[in-house]
Length: 256
Image (cartoon, rainbow, N blue to C red; front, side):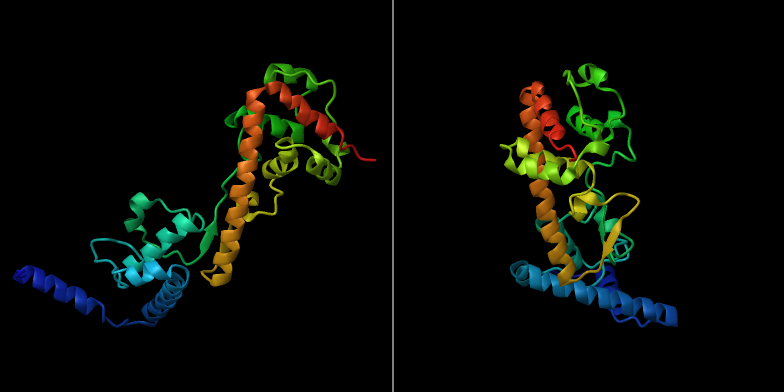
């Protein structure tokens, strides 16, 4: 293929831009910081996805000026692989080429319930039930209207022994045994960073092997707990009278 003079000139300019030298201290510091971050990300790419790294033909240089993306095509390949195979990094991939700021850190955004910040009507019936069980904001007499059940008694949350409830749940048949863990999801007390994070306590992690390993394992835990939540919800939806079994298990965990 014969290149036209315009194409040849454009490619020549792009090549020259690769060797441009920062002219100020601020530009120099910014350049070195970006270079350091790129080296780290590409090193992680090669370590975590060696097959894809070997097969990749993407450039390690920045996109052309027409695409305002702060990561090179090869870095973007790595970010996509992290999103697809390890854990979510919160990118809208349809507009990823317009990512003007570097992802200098891994941000753990909230991925689940935040009933402290949202109205209860925004949740489905199953989660409304769990929220009311934990908060008990309206009397038992209204549970028939809300959930189609009429419990004789619901133990006040201040009288509940959560450790006792956890033990009782371990002894219960599945999926009733998932109640404690599902309540922990609602209450942000799972010890899983993806489930316990909230908009007021967003956490950041450096791009490192330790961070990727930790967040990957935590994401597996989140998926495992979400699966239990889904199974318990499906079991309840089959017969809403089963809400009473949840309440009965809850009531048994009264403090001594």
